[in-house]
Image (tube, rainbow, N blue to C red):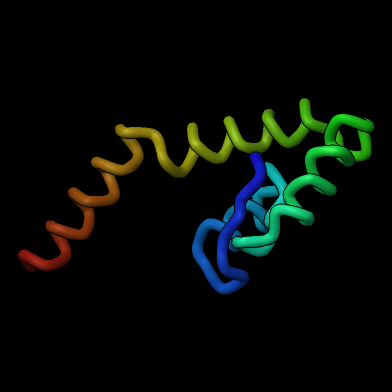
Length: 79
């Protein structure tokens, strides 16, 4: 994944922490082109990035995981 987002955004934080893509500054077509060329040239392990991204989604963003977290928050608020 290529994330064109502000440096302090949640998207950039997750991409970097998980190692599931490359973050670039928004509004920089030159940087986007350079990143795409690097990916095509094999400078990054796309298979590994994909594996990390899938693991993150399955562990952190899966519907069942999200529902369990919301349920936990609601129980805490109720008490």
